[in-house]
Length: 428
Image 1 (tube, rainbow, N blue to C red):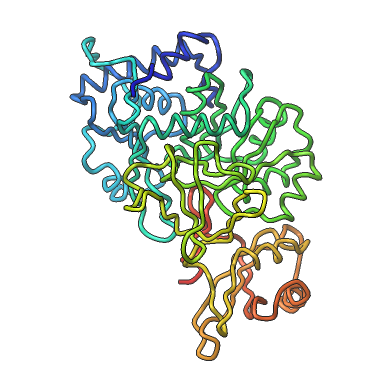
Image 2 (image 1 turned 135 degrees about the horizontal axis):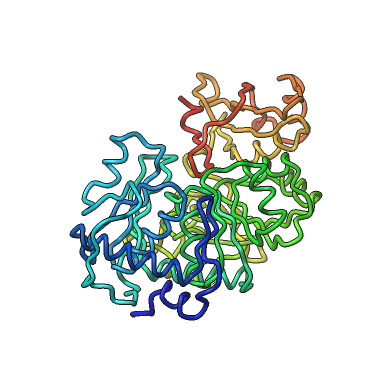
């Protein structure tokens, strides 16, 4: 199936609408379309042809959006690159690319560049690398159809206001941040783009301009720490990337910050569930060993197995109301004395303690019990708690075998650029 280019349609229907508000300037849809056309012509002058991959190693500014949309107009799959990677890691991500854009495109134009003005929904649009929390990062080829259905499913779950301004502080090399740019072009709404997460700057943006924002639990907590209270225009803060504890949701509610929990994956083009139920275009079921399985038009074609499902490696259940409840990664389960312990459940209890900002739980080998439960705790600024105090707190809220035997205190937890916990680093 072929559809009109998203950006061309937005420029035709809403040319004066602000498409992007970045730290280096503002672009309206008419201006962004013209800039993306120039980017496509410059890529063509470099020898890039439809179907060729293009590495995009640019900061989260205007040039990133112009280059990304230039690739989409040309039909050349974009490969966003995390600028925090080493030179060797960047080369590995962009192996096979016909060009790598590391500076704003300038120079020669190919006036005859083959820009079709439409998108083949079966063609690859963007190649996104997974965050690599349990194994090395893997490239996932997401089609134009994947992005379109993801945007439509998100719109059905959240609604779309023509005046929406979606704040993006997530890395554009990851699907969560990138999807904000793409879906906003499909809706012809605005993106407010911050190059880095700064709690005070983001809180000010939410208090004055943003109607939607995507966060991970850690950044939500930092926004609340920065004083975010009762933002008048905010429709929702989408919280994903990691399990969010009831204590943090209660804290956000007390501050008048509306939150919606989401679950998603790179292979499913971002959101799978929003607020509990699957997106209207997405199917979810629980397979063997409580594994979450996903199918539908948002799933990358190559991610489907022979049974027609994406096997996520995450564990969960579906409650009587049809909401997906994610309990953790299959490989994260701790088996101690023959009992299974879900780290997320223990973390939720620890993070409900008033002195605890964050907690991470994992297992270590134990000659008697097989594994013992270990907790790494980050305390709230200015707060104190002892190992004995936390152990006693857990004992009245958890089964005996779930109570951590060892408590470690750390100034921060190891996380990926997108905010996911690197549990392997704690185990090592």
